[in-house]
Image (cartoon, rainbow, N blue to C red):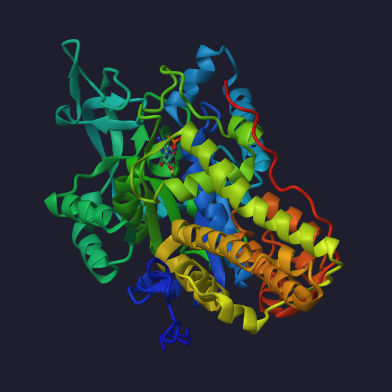
Length: 551
Ligand code: ME8
């Protein structure tokens, strides 16, 4: 027994890949479950363009966790937003001959529209030009200054606007005889100005101690090791203000300078908790590997200085290429979320991203694999199962779904045994799987269940049994059982296949199942999960239209 959570000791697990490593507990994750508040954040994205599929991926991780957590009874706060006090955003506005605030308003709106079209269940959308954020940042700056952790110095160095950070020559690569930023392939600007600095070096030992005491702080673990090695190598203080830029938040102790993205952006995570939501902090951050040091070193040090608790966990995602190439505007291969949704549907895009790409590793986004997974796994696998079961049951006037135990006993081959394991899961076990094994794993387990259910249907042939009076009763039992299986699989899929889950709610026509929502904390999902016998008023429908062949 761990803190009241039942260990899954007696699961008869035929499905090796699924459950046999549950004992590799990630204790920090389990600790989240003890509080009934759950707070998760995306990075705030630069508002100089519309979001691309990399942004969509980070945001979806938060969305899926949030939806599951609501089902498990948590009060969820999921925040996202835009990073606006940025030199590159200002430069873009000038290039477009637009007023800076008009430009920022336009992109904030486009970001919101993208997330709304993707049905993201965020609760907070922060803009760092908001008065609330500015006031909070100034308050933290003053606290940090009063502690003696901010001092004035002269900075001379190279600044990459694309990265919004200072660079050392050793960070650069050679291109056409010039030293350029490896990510933006542009020469950084040489800057000499008076800046205010944050005493990062003062926190080196405290950070190392914190990492040692919180081995689950960063996932995946190899990123954690990179961060620790970097900190042990020695930390340098970093500049938090700019003298020459005027777009940012004025320092309360020196109005001639503004603080900007490198300092203010991180504070967005606390701004959203001010004014009533303080108890949600500390939260969990999802972020890309490009900003891992920023989040895992600068941010905890800033919090230590200002006297706040450190984040619970940081989930660092890898980067993906597109059909083997770096995703970039100049190559014209940027994958736009709204185009994906329009062509393939939201749920097919989500399923592909989490079935094919492992959180934390670099991966390759492939249109061909997305199409294949949509057609063969979702359409021919899940869609076919729901459609065949509901049509056949409807045709034979079946109005009940039931967990017939005798049907369990018929599951003989390996695949069908996997179905038994999935049907034996409890909500607590699903929550543990999600937290220890993550979304990819739950998705894969779910898909094994879909395959197993199709195999069961194929082996038992209820449509044949229904035709003869001697076996008709057995045929009806199979269909009632399969309706129960469809219900359980649909409930597992509710947080990631949101559109299709809504369709299945209509197809099944049961009052309690119809009430399940992943957008608000409610008990209906647990109650629906526990239903072993339930009425249905079937309204069969097609889940997935076949895609037009691509040209
Ligand atoms: O860095 N593959 O904003 P940003 C996967 N404003 N994910 C990707 C990706 C790729 N190829 N490219 C980007 C910023 N991402 C700052 C953050 S937070 C306080 C400030 C994702 O618009 C990934 O999550 O450049 C990465 O961290 C984020 O987009 C960077 O977004």
